[in-house]
Length: 386
Image (tube, rainbow, N blue to C red):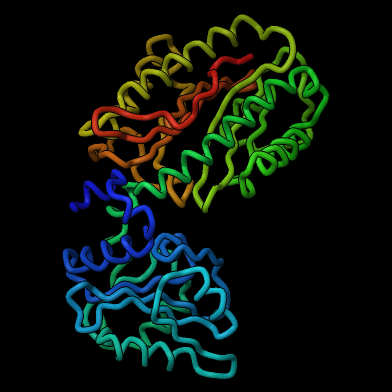
């Protein structure tokens, strides 16, 4: 099948072995960007290609993916010996080499690259690879030329396969359920600090099936809502005031990212009710603009025009949205000047906001998937303030 079919999740074979399919697509893509191979270390790229999630550490841990045209195109892992069992259980990479504490990992790297015919030619390395490891790779392959893994992976990761979409849908459903829990909490939230409510949200996300929080939860009450990335603090929540709640969790490594601005007890000021309605209309306009072939900037423009029309243009201080995948923020960015056309399989946030310093803020955010003829909302809860 074509890459288009893969991106849309067609075919059951693809859904049963997504990481192997991604490595195969990467190997083909390497030839298109004139690279002999790719080297990933513990990162979102390694997780994307193997399913193994690990934070970078002091030990050398590499995935090598040769180009499809290589004499030996089989991907291989070089891992510390203490990881061998975990890696074999968690991945379908057949070639796993190990090195033990007390051995020279650079020598082991040199041997692997030579065996794969990658000690020369052009190699792509993780964009976020620590300098120590990139320098050791240079020492292991002094005749190689170097580039960044994003040359091959960016266009692959930007369009989600069915396994990724399934995880994103589930993570979004968890966030939706917690929005429902927040609405049921109602007046009981009054008197809680922002931090206490953020902890409450994290507990509910876990109870609903999520794994951790996908970023620092934003609980921004009253005037703190005018700070788009406030986080949370000791400010107590009061009756009748808007509270910006931006949070998510992960399912199979994939995050949710949803914002609702709620009033937990009583009626908000008329000025806030008017602003909330503007933001809701702007968010609806942005979602309506999402479809294949539309420039990313057009979605930003559609949402921004609604807010500018009522005189709040200067109070909408950020882009309308961003791509979401293993990274919470990734391509495509819905921002002025980005004319990249949207494609089926891309997942984006649509999150306009209005922020009035010293008074309040309002943001409404959903994730959407670009489909063949429009988009699918991943978040389905009511966008009102009550």
